[in-house]
Length: 111
Image 1: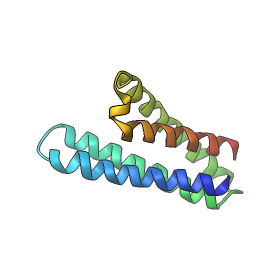
Image 2: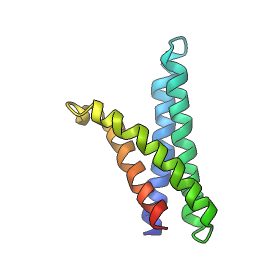
Image 3: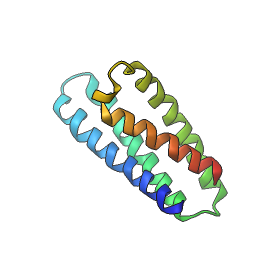
Image 4: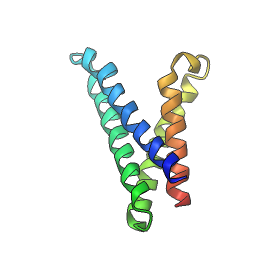
């Protein structure tokens, strides 16, 4: 289970990096650029927090801080997936991000 936890954490880092490159760089002059960059940085940060937490199972403060941050990310990812519910299969990155965040939230709370 520890290996699966680390895999989902690093998947969040990769998805956040891809989000930064794919969504923010082409829109530097548009108002959506800062929002996309903020979302990408948040995904990378949450992925790194979960990667560190997966290697330090006895650090309860880190575990609960990561659980709170991941719950906030889930609170943002799930409405986006709900908004795309008609064609969510055409947006695989959004679906993959939501799945990774939900699994990481489970791993954070389960300890």
